[in-house]
Each structure stands twice: as structure tokens, then as C-alpha cells.
Amino acid sequence: MNPDRDSIFKEETTILEHLHLDGDQHILKLNSPDIASTALPGSFVHVECGPQFTLRRPISIMRADKNSGTIELLYKRLGRGTTALSEREVGEPLSLLGPIGRPFIPHPERKRPLLIGGGVGMPPMVFIAESLRSDSSYQPFAILGSEVPFPFPVTPSQMVIPGMPDGVIGSMPLLEDWGIPNRLASLQGYPGTHDGYVTDLARHWLDALTVEERSQVELFSCGPHPMLEAVATLAREYDLPCQVSLEEFMACGVGGCAGCVVQIETPQGPAMKRVCVDGPVFEATAVFGA
Image 1: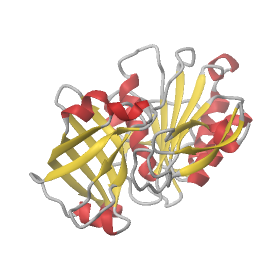
Image 2 (image 1 turned 135 degrees about the horizontal axis):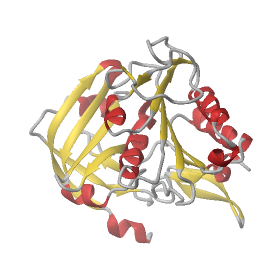
Image 3 (image 1 turned 60 degrees about the vertical axis):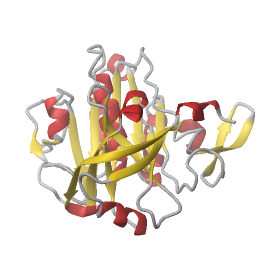
């Protein structure tokens, strides 16, 4: 039995807020004190979308407030399960399993975390950004990408970030309020965003750093598999450590069914690892090669 399961709670929560945003995106705020007190950046919850569904759905945690005992989840309506979830109303109960998974682990000698999130891979980047606020020695920079409207108002940033192309001033208000520099990328031509890939924007930033500054960078990323592969290639190009959070379909979500296994390179050779409990966070080199 995996020892990590001892820290997984089954919690009957209450929906406190349910925001419905453009692009079939939704944000749930839940009363969930047990999960809020133990969740770490990269953790996810397995959500019971409705009584008609046997299987739960995995959703990354975007925020966890230990003081208020609340968590926030951003998800996109894709299939029958998330469609049913999107119809749940404030005040209704919601069953969760969590927090699940191995989290992101920043290395203290790498004081310039580069956070890259795409689509519904943005929430873990928000979570890790908030966790880094408590240590002023870190200087994170976040790049978020989306091909549907961003789930927040894109606002002009007041922060000057070296290396950014002209006109790329769009930011996430929450990160801006926290004092965390961030920029946005999209191929959809949204005002203020970079017309290209998140990795293109990351390359602009990395090239503007000194050699010493670049030696303090570590990459953290979550998003679609092709984006993660591109981020891993970027990290390899600049010889930087990189952690990625994988997105896979899951059944049990707690390591019992082995339905979410992927091949990972280990010191002993290739091995099949479960994304739910052996991940979802892995070293990029283990997933995509050195």
C-alpha cells in the first residue's frame, strides 16, 4: 500500500461559490478544511461530479487557504462529468478525495522559479506562486497561455520585465496584486498577450538574464502534453532543472487501478509509474529524456 494514501481525506464539502466564465471554464470555491490544511502545489482532488457517475474526475487545486479552510478549483467543461459538475449550485454538497499526488518541490538554491502554465494547467502555477510569496528570497516569473479566453480579466501590468516584446503587457490581476511578475501568451490575438507560444515568451525572458541570474532558474510547468514537451526541450536547451505535472485520464485516482500509468526513466531503467500517486509531478528528464 502506498504510504501517501494515509494523507488522503474523503471530505464532504459545500459549494461556497461557483463562477461560470467564458470558454466553458468554471471556478469552484469549496469549504474543505482537511484538504486545505494539507494540500501542496501540484496536489489535485478527485471530485464526485454527480450521483449518476461511478467514476470521479481529477481536478488540480488552484488555491488552498488553511486559515479559512477553503480550496478553489478551476476546470473546463469537456465531457458528461464536468458538464454535470458545472450545473452544481452554491450550497450543494460535493464529495472529494484529496489532496492526492506528489507536489512540486522548489530547490532553495534556485531563487528564480519560472512558472509556465497552459489552459487548465494554469491552476498549479497559481498555487505554487502563492506558496512562494511567503519567502521574499524567491523571484518567480509566471507565463500563462490559453487558446480560449483567459479565466480572469487580462489587465495591463505595471511591472517592467526585461526581454518582453513590445506590447506584451497583459497580466493576471491576482498575480499582479501579489507582486509576482507575469505575462500571457496566446495564438488568438487577445490584446496585451504575446502572439505565440509560452515557450517563445520564456525564451525572451531567459535571454535577457545574465549568466548568473540564469543559473538560479528552475522551471515548473503544467499543461497539455505537447506544451510540456516543448517546456522540457527549452529546459534542456538552457541546461535548467524542470519539473512537469502530467495530465492523464484517471479511474480510481489513488493508485489502485493503474489506469493512468506512463513510462518514466529511473536510475534502474524504464518503469511504469502511476500519474495519480507516483506523480503527477515528475522531473522533465524522466518523462521526456535528458
